[in-house]
Structure formats: C-alpha cells, structure tokens
Length: 490
Ligand code: NAD
Image (cartoon, rainbow, N blue to C red):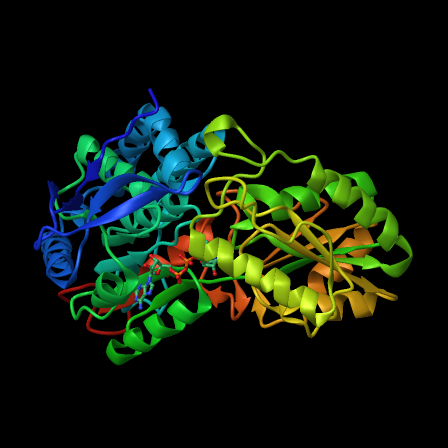
C-alpha cells in the first residue's frame, strides 16, 4: 500500500533514462533513516545531453511558434495529469521528504495549480506599441531567453520546480531542471505529466545529481541562457559567479530570517496560532518561516507562555502517521539545527522549550524550540536555522521593533500583528522584505509575487511578476514610408 518505485530514472529528451555511467544516488526516508529508493545520478555527460535536447527544442521554435493559447492549453493538460497522480505524488513526497500525506497532496495540487495559473497567462504576455509618428511602427516583443537551467532545494521540491517550469513553458523557454539530491522523487511527476500531456521532446528535462558536479555543470554550461536558482545564499553566490562569466540573467530565491512584529493591540490568540504555523510548519524547513517574533517587553511573558503551550501540544513523529511535527530532511540537518541551538544557549539565550534532537526516535526529529533572552547580535537571531526554532526578541517602542526586524542581512518576508490598519500600513512600508504578512503568516498564494530583498535574492517567483523574469524585451522599429506620413508609392 505504502510502496513506491525503487528506482527512478532521469527524463531527458522525452525519454526516461539511466545515468551515462550507470551510477545511482540512494534516497533515505527521513522519518525512519531507512533506505527508500534510488535515483539515477546525473553528472556532466547527462547534463550535456539534457542541455543539447533543450537547445534543439528551443531552436526548433516548436513552443514559440505555437499559438500562446494552445501553449496554455498544453499546460492545462500537464495540470490535469498532475492532479490525476496527486495521491501517488503525496506518498512519494511523504516518504522522501517527511511531509504528511495531506502536506504531500497539497504540494501536488499547488504544482498543478502553477500550470493552470501560468497556462492561463500564456496568451496574455503582451508587448507594447510605441508611437514614433506616421512614418514608423515600433513595438516590443517579450522574447524567451532559450534554455532555462533550474535548480531546486529539498524542502518543497515539487512546488518550487512547478512554479519555475510553468513560467518557462508559458514564455516558450525550454528547461533543464536539477532536482534536489535529498528529496527528488516528487519532481519526476512533472516530467511524467509533461510526457502524458504531449509536451515537445526536449522542452522539459529533469535530472537528479549532486550540486557540486551536476548542478555546477548545469549552471556553467555554455548553452544555458538563463538560471533560476532556489536555495541557500552561499550556493546562490557561487552560481552567480558562474553566470557572470557568461553574462546570463538569474533569478535568485534564497534564504531568510524573517521576523514578525507584534504590536500592543494585537489579537494575541491569533498571533500565537499564526506564529506557531509560521515556524513549525514542515519542521521549520521553510525559506519564508517566521523564525523571529518581536514583542513588547510588557507582553513577553504572556505570549511566550502561550507559544510554549502550543509547542508542547504538537505531536512529533512520521508524516505518514499524520503527526504535527514531522522530521527534518537528514541527520546532517538535524545535527546542524541542534548545534545552532546549543551555541545559542552558550551565548546566553534560554531555550524555554525544546532545543534538542529526539534521539529516541529512529528518524531525524527536532523538538519544537523557542528561545528567549535573544540579543540581536547572536547568531540565532541573525542566521537561518531552517528548523523549528523561534527566537523571541523584545522592544520598547515601535521604531526599535522595526529596526530589530530589519537588522539582519536577509529580507525575504516580514509580518505584523495589529488591529490598527494605520499601524500595519506604517510598519509594512518600513519593513525591508519582499513580502509582508499582516495578521496571518503565509497570507498569500500562487497569485502573489514572492522573492527577496537584500541577501534573500532578487527577481520574483509566483504571481504575474514572475513572468517578467522569463522574457527579455526586443524592440522592433520600422520605417514605413518615404517620409512625411505620405501614401506609399507616391
Ligand atoms: P542548497 O543551496 O544547499 O541547495 C539547493 C540546490 O542547489 C540543491 O539542488 C543542490 O544540489 C544545488 N547545488 C548545491 N551546490 C551547487 C553548485 N555549486 N552549483 C549548482 N547547484 C548547486 O540549499 P538547500 O539546503 O537544498 O535548501 C535550503 C535553502 O534554500 C535555505 O537557505 C532556504 O531558505 C532556501 N530556500 C529558498 C526558497 C525561496 O523561494 N526563496 C525556497 C526554498 C528554500
């Protein structure tokens, strides 16, 4: 019943294929620490094949020449096939990523929705007519870049892959996507859905390999024209260096250390529930996690008490059994999170709940953790943990709260808890973040533009804004007549 395929191939040029050298990567179930499956391990030779297929498809102009409305219809077909496979996808995502089955199904449905959302926009990507007087016609063409290399992290691999592949197809780019080596399985369903929908061969290629060889070979490939990267700042920086050599554009969706400011008039029950969901969802392995909460000093005890009660009420265990707090992705990630918690305690912060691995459980589980007495200069207050760890900081006046929220190198998301709309507007204007949530962390959706400021990156995914990153403007200026707006030929 809960069985999945034991070996998964790469998808290159419309075919499922082994790695050139036959190597494989073992995939673990993070809830048990047991081996789950194997995937073909792509290296440079496989990347070369995939990029060649994507290039040939792009040069054939098959996608570009299609009426955009038909390209959109093709994307609706991809969505239909994704939806039909939603239960299978949910199981794969539950077993290789640690999510609950509901969480896995949500991933599948969100992925399908990216294809309908951007499929519906495929025929609305319009150029502009620019008036130059009667003797000229001048217009712009939003042109695809060519081969889009896409690199995806392990926390929400399917959704993140779907949002980038869908934008690329809507704009007639072709894609080579490298799935994350820790949790690649759900991304293969995009390839399967494209295959069943009849997407042209080579338009979408999906392979899995390690970052240092497969990923590096992809982003530095001379036939790649565009890069979409979602992952850590350090990897993003190395990819940007590779892109700089060839002057190709990048979308950088990087990490965060997002803070919410709670104002005195806030609905505390609502803020506590929202904060718990903001930091404990998917065991905190969310780039936009609410990893800091900034509260008035006078309310700290009350709010922390309620948050601790909430954290303690969460059940910890495998996603397949429907627990609230599911595993983190790997032993290495669990060690890193615990190490950051121990260092925070050493620096003087108090873990009022949690702070340790659950070594009594077989997989990679971390207790939901809340720190108080956090000083803004501490690493726990400045650096991304990517685990279920909340830092609570306090303030005396609202200006100080905004300064604390803005006081890291990141700028992905920010939040505000208040009933006062004027205060919400004042604070939203001052918070340096690509997305600001008021009274509900994660308010927003596929339709709302998402992306970072500062070291959290640039470019936007989701929403209509994302499409702007997948086209380049070509201007065409035409001299129409001999001059003076006269009739042609005399
Ligand atoms: P990571 O940077 O370690 O890896 C991300 C991807 O990059 C993986 O597929 C990896 O194989 C690949 N990679 C690694 N080295 C590479 C190289 N030299 N060249 C090319 N590719 C390489 O990140 P991670 O640990 O998988 O993911 C967690 C990070 O991702 C966190 O920082 C998180 O905030 C961020 N993230 C951001 C968003 C967003 O939309 N802003 C979404 C999810 C995750």
